[in-house]
Length: 187
Image (cartoon, rainbow, N blue to C red):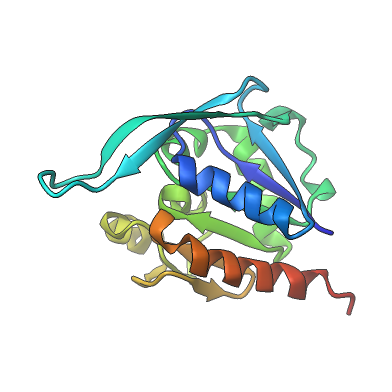
């Protein structure tokens, strides 16, 4: 059983956040949710409607939080997931988020990014030389961060698994669980 840290915040996309938490728990892993504070975060529902050029946003469920970013000891976790939505835009500037995310990348531990979740490692210079998916309008941002953008549902680059958004979660989850299981096998 792996301990997986899920970094999120207010305005994170509901499916991007809850689907991985439930899938990890279903797989026998411990999913621990971290945000700026320990109050429940307010998720949002992003959807695509035929009469709108951009995604729409509606209020979603509350997601309970286990730890504040400042209280996270990343050495206590085996993997990291960064859901999308608008939360990554805000949490990427938090110094504790930088400390946490850098820990996982420097050690080659499994990291999953979903949709806008790629904004966090991009802002920290951690995507340079990597191949990643993200929400397609972030292609320029990902490339400016030094990564190769791939428009696919389950991009695996070493221990990093990324996708474009919630419609890709079945493929992303299968790929992430495989990377997690491989990382959990003793050498």
